[in-house]
Length: 443
Image 1 (cartoon, rainbow, N blue to C red):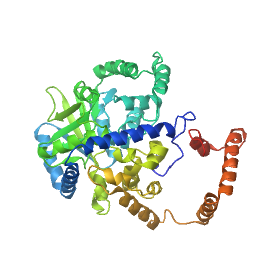
Image 2: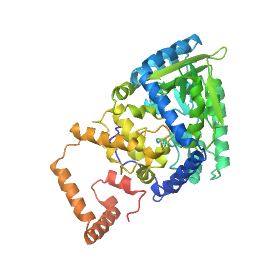
Image 3: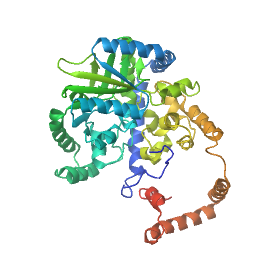
Image 4: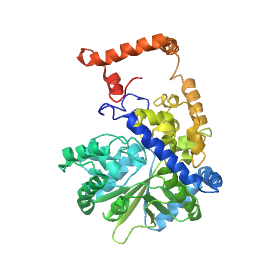
């Protein structure tokens, strides 16, 4: 889906009142709690600076570190596959799946697999790839996309999930969190036992030792990587750290920023395939080298995917993750998506920002997100994909006139509300407008 499909799809399918308003308190509470977990550390500023320097060193020496990483992996019996883009990654994974005549795969949470649309690709070839992270499982069952990179089902209430489980799984309707979790566990256990392939992402790869590090809280990644006889891990090439000694810092920072924990419940260190099993690692570029070669934007590859920039972003908290149109929403998406998909595809995303600086001020690896977003705006203008047209001039001049005059603004809102009420009865289709309005009350 185009990164430029902005602001129109977020509330599609949500009932009125269950959209952005339900996101705000959760996101604010999450951001403040996560920050409190960090500020209790006396040396937090030094932690951030050290993490930044480690990731900067990694990116500056990525070519040599990747070679070292591959050598260490292969010495342990891990088969390494390089993929230049999403298509190549999917083709290579399909070859492995077909080699083992696999029909059912279980998958731990992996943003890079969302990026290459692995589930959709495998489904087209007759292979079921089932998400086993609770949030991802819910979203997959609902036929939608994650709304947050850490908490994929943030947009759904417990009652809505209970309705979903009743419709799709035939389970008794419940809004109890523990009962919903037990339903998902019961449904997934059989899949873990019968799966032919297990997929996972990789939080950190250690170049020095060829170690794959995976962090989780639910235990589903442990089952996805150990129950099937074949494990295929997927990793963006930037997810390296140079040494094993670098890991403790990131293992302390990631959960504090991501989920407000001192440590995740489980940390897996994979150093080779277990006896009688096969282990593959697919290293995915997908335009990361383009970002790496761009000195102005290289810093975005330091990101450890904690998601706190989103929780701290006033725009994200109001419009939600779907509004950004692709896998990575919020301030991260505003910078990274134009690098991965190209500025011509995602030119609108950098403009979905107030430039308040809330994101960059709390980034654990000190990515200067608000200035990178500003630079992406300049790129969009320079690429002439956002060239000023007569229609743009008329539209924004009219908006400015209405927005700065109380009488005109009140009158405009009256007619907009009236138009929304009568739109469903008109022969003209207001698809995008209706999708945007379904979960929003105008002021």
